[in-house]
Length: 367
Ligand SMILES: Cc1cc2nc3c(=O)[nH]c(=O)nc-3n(C[C@H](O)[C@H](O)[C@H](O)COP(=O)(O)O)c2cc1C
Image (cartoon, protein in one colour):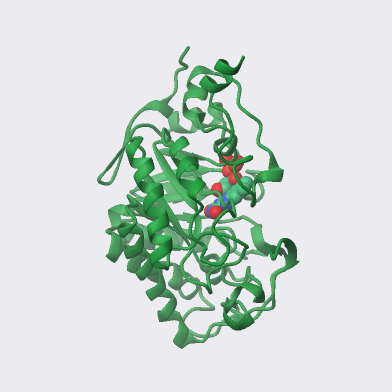
């Protein structure tokens, strides 16, 4: 039995037609090949199984070795990684799906063991985050970072440009810039992590500069109509904070709107935690941005329907529900029960907890 909701209405995202309003949120799964960081062969099955979502956004994928912060996350900077991703996009497209790749530089959320010659991770300022990463099979404190030299910043923008070309070569329909969750671009934007005194620190304009310069560079490669960005204005994830997130993100979103990015993907509240973690006017961002607004964090069928009906978002991104329900789109349409997710298999491992969650059809057949 189908239920009344806008979730199943098609949506035109720039040049791309989406079959419905479901987005699979980016979800790190740490199953890439150790050493080469080529996506696992299982990744093609995993994403293809979920291709009925209007849009899939891949797990965050590092733009360089320097941009990696966790064990066995995939890259998009080498030829082999591009070839690995091509297998994923081909399989998703065969099933009629659409897929963007999330482009990631972790900044200070990394460990010496992952960096070239055991060097320090880079950050806007040499301030160590309180937090852990997973590396060499165990949880470890993130390492003491070093502040990026002003002269190094163009190189990071170039890395974003280069991997955008790679992403298109790998067959992605577009790219999502990871500006959220306390990673490099969020670190530059927020004054809890950025104490610079040059053109990339201090005022809101200066702190927003890197996120906007990266967005401009990526949009110039992919086309603004194939470039989205993810932000998380108030999340405390990865020890990030800002003294005035509303003013900061009003300014950032004005800049993104001027660049005509195709979507703004917003983690509302604390990532994976309370939606009302801190006061913030998300409707204000929506008003300032004329592209698509993707809402995320703690959505279920009812809340998604309510928000779409109110016109407060165009698309809804679901994270954990997509981990355990490859056919989330069909299950919610039928009002069928959902599989529970198993936290123990989120990060690392093989097929278990990755490609073996049953569809409703498979579960019915097994009864
Ligand atoms: C296992 C796991 C991995 C995640 N990896 C990413 C990631 O790579 N990039 C990102 O922006 N957010 C990541 N997130 C956050 C999710 O995209 C999403 O914001 C969060 O789970 C809240 O949405 P939900 O309530 O629908 O799960 C991750 C979350 C989980 C649980």
